[in-house]
Image (cartoon, rainbow, N blue to C red; front, side, top):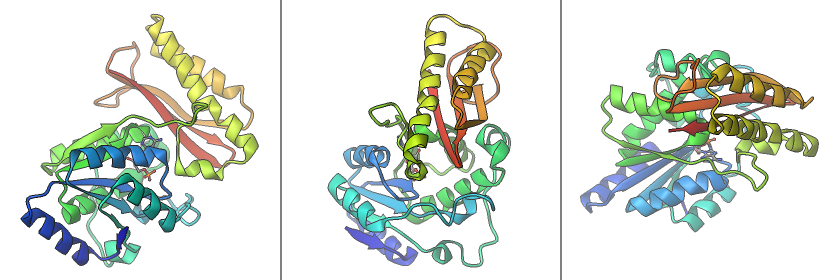
Length: 279
Ligand code: AMP
């Protein structure tokens, strides 16, 4: 698997693909790839002639007390997964290659200030900036994002519309472990006891989903029941659980579709996110 570190080198390769009339898909990741990432790569390989997987732990999306330094990294394992999945190359720049002397950042109002944005105030500016840069470097026809990060997917779709990127954004479903835990590079932080405790996220979401399917119309009742289920777990500490409309991410009083029920929960020191969408 070809691992490209330099922007100019990547541009040369992509220019040649373009001259050859090939379509290009982009899968932006922070590496330490798992089946969730692989599902995005698989879809991109199906739909494009060439697929670039970016593998970059982006410093600008981490707050000062977050896990940038300790975030897991394994480029060799990532290369093997990308090779097996049929990706064309990995773009794995150093932070200096991406940000040396940068003074320009992409920011967004409103939908970046709610949910994860409340406790991670600079996060989405970092995401919008790095994804804009990747879009400008790779100039993909399509880019693939997981519903696991539902707010991020919503933010990226809005950014592409607002800034006229002209790139198709493809959202892909959440891939879970057999017992329901959403796959995440951060699951590696969990001890075996915490790993069991972490099931309270998917379990409580399933209870919430069942309530809505059985006719519950009060968002507060569903959110309350989800929180109650999580609070039974002594290792869990809720950051937020919220029911919002899927487009504006505004709080719902009455259950109305399309909706997003999203949560962030600390299991020990590890902050995990999960959600469900009803269209
Ligand atoms: P990350 O490396 O965590 O920044 O994730 C890169 C991309 O993979 C994002 O678009 C995520 O939403 C997506 N992703 C991560 N985990 C999963 C999962 N369990 N299922 C589907 N997509 C995922």
